[in-house]
Length: 148
Image 1 (cartoon, rainbow, N blue to C red):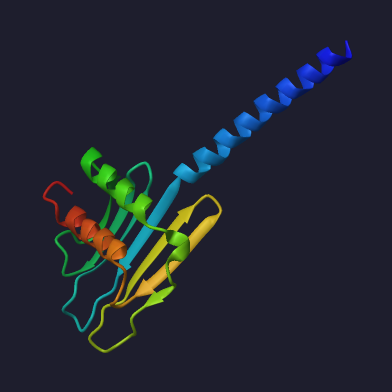
Image 2 (cartoon, rainbow, N blue to C red):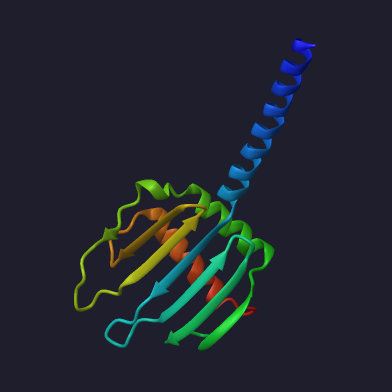
């Protein structure tokens, strides 16, 4: 009888611990990313875009962009797949908070990433890591796409 109750206790513990692990893994898969590009000397494009891991986005075109104003929608499967790949390659914990220095001709860019309890905010002007540059290029490609 005692062995049976120990076995049942261990079995319950195993089931609970496995379900807890699934929840933590699921939380790590939920993320959002916000990108803001400010104008510089009235020559640079200015916009912001917020995207969730589901592909839902909210875009605000401000200056010198193809799409002006607010636009909400869903990224297509190819865009979302490429974004997820890029987001997964970035070691967010290792990223610095700032890259480059503010200068009269420099464009300020702000990038925020959130996943579960982890949040990272980066502002940069230049000298950003290649992973961040690729992410920015993808955002530019998405907003300039004809079907955006």
